[in-house]
Image (cartoon, rainbow, N blue to C red; front, side, top):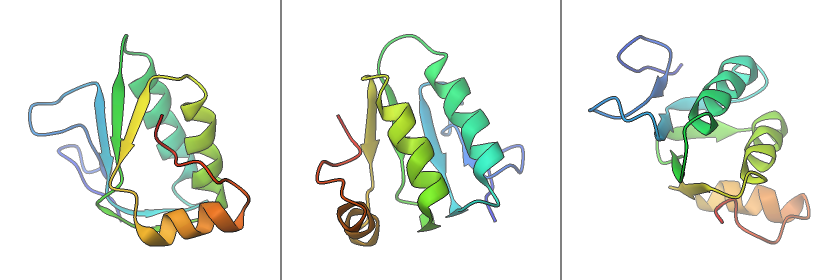
Length: 100
C-alpha cells in the first residue's frame, strides 16, 4: 500500500513540493489509475519535475508503461531506480534508463 499525508501513497515531499513525486509500496496494475493521476498532476507543473522510486517495492509493466509515457515529456528526472526495475526495463527492450 502507498501512503502520504493524505493516505494515498503518493508523497509530494515534506514541504508538499508539487514538482516531486515519491510513491511508496507497489506500482502495479492495481495502483495504475492513482499513479497515472499523480503523474498527470506532476507534469502539469512547469519546468523540471522529479519522480523518486526509492520507496517502491514492486513494479509491473502497467507502471513501466506509465513512466515511459511520462518520460516522453522530456522534463522528468527519475531517481531511486532499483536494480530490479532496471533489469525489467532491459528485459523488455528498453536499454535507456527512465531518467532523461
